[in-house]
Amino acid sequence: MSLQAPSALVIDARGLRFGIAAARFNAGYVDALLERCVATLKSAGAAEPVVVRVPGSNELPVAIQALADRREFDALIALGVLIRGDTIHYEVIAYSATHGLQDVAVATRVPVINGVLTVENDAQARERCHGSTDRGAEFAHAALEMADLFRNLRPTA
Image: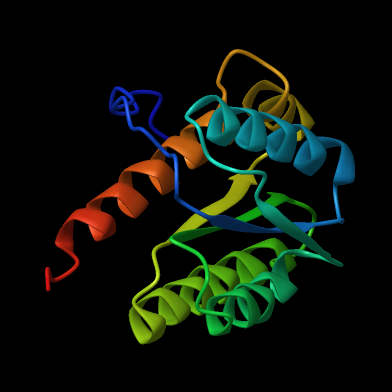
């Protein structure tokens, strides 16, 4: 995973609405992502995002689809943490969630940020969720940038 994220743009998020679906599996890590994500959105001027919780990362695409169906959000964020285990289950869920989230974005034309971390171990999860590699803020910045892009691409009357 690259540690060279693009620099965050300064975006005025007033008037933008965000929805977040967050997994409850690996809750200590996902909760940290969620906290940092929400704080970043709010510091940009966004209203409190709508947050829904699901059992695990495999359930994120259908929750994101339900949020997209409401047609009230400028961007959506899916948060989860998958840690490699002794079987390929981690890979199956990562693949399924990634493709499901992308399908929702393309079908609904609502930006969907894939904030599902796939890490090798607890140390990597801890660094990305609680440490100096602030993936929660990065996911929020991506959502802000995409929401702003779509706001600027809307046809004018």
